[in-house]
Length: 551
Image (cartoon, rainbow, N blue to C red; front, side):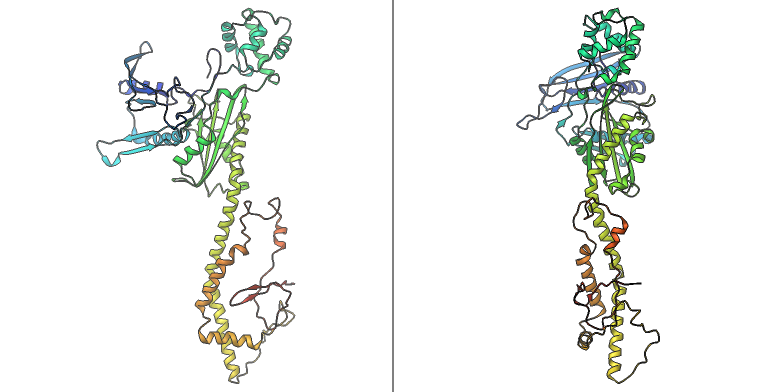
């Protein structure tokens, strides 16, 4: 918003819509509004910075002001019914407003609660409490409270001079009427920001022969003012960027605390983009991306703020929603935008927020500078999350694979024990002199993945002896396989704590490279001793010898 001589970011009266609350109260009930306020000690009117002293005590103001305020609807003037001051014995700091309004609570209850929840996110330094009592049904009564989480207030926005690229005819005319400068050159360098003496002389030269550096500012007529405005708005390459000191963003620290207080996510990342400008109006974008949280829904949920005020309606057309849904490639950051519970929080502060429509409910995506700034801020958040999510996804994959292996262990152990039972039966038949005919489907040595190797008689007798003693059973096989999966799964699947989920440099490789180290695994009986040089995976019950199969 602008003043007589400069511009700075504002939130309105306390950022709560005090004027509309008073008007609606007057219209619906006619009851005046009660206000109680006390500023921080040593800071007139509030201000920024901490409310705590160096020794940890609160900066409590000495007095508390109480006011009963009404409005004269005929003269459009305030009517102060009562205004008094008293000692601040209770240590009150802040502003308290009491308004009695009439409305449809059943229809708009969810919107009121939603607004308070989002207001608690963007004002973690404030304590918010709402109490609802129902005289007809006490079960419907509830109390909603958000305690103060931060003691750090946002820095108060300071007033700066208007940027040349943001002026119009009416503003220049007002500045010319109020200026104390005696020459046009002095007016350009003193009443506007970003114009040095050298730049001012260049502008006057471009304006033409009808302008002179030492002419009085009050001598300009309407045509000359129009010509001056056109040049100022088109020659932005000569000016410095707008001063960001007129803005008061919440800060990443407070934004993080606010989200944790209300949403309670599993993980959160915040980022602030560098200050930007559009049409001479400075702006700053702060963003946060969270995963999980209480009452969170699957997919992307966008929460928007403009000058630290929640925006509830027409979110689908807002620049934050469109960037989050169409400009961010979530899969690149190990985030599943359909299954994961993603919270996107975007706060835009500016001296002139480019709202669309008269309701000021959303910010359009037609301003490229703001759109790109929102995108960069969200990408910064996602990059912070990527390292954590890569490791989380790798551990999740291992868990899923463990679950699959454990699912088939009962069938595998049953089959293995069945094979051993057949071997035991054949051994008993051989001992009894029974000769079994060879099977016509018997594999040939050429077809077998490895030469037909015969195990030693000693190994066979040892296994069969263990079965007879009960040392090998289906339950024992199942137990040992489960132990092997639990112990060796992390090693087999290559989970090593690498944040990128990849042990290769660069963090990426083609599918062909991934398959180079993979070998097919065949379980075949060993009839002879294996090659001593082959790799070996040992287990208390069996040994694995990986071999290459030539098709």
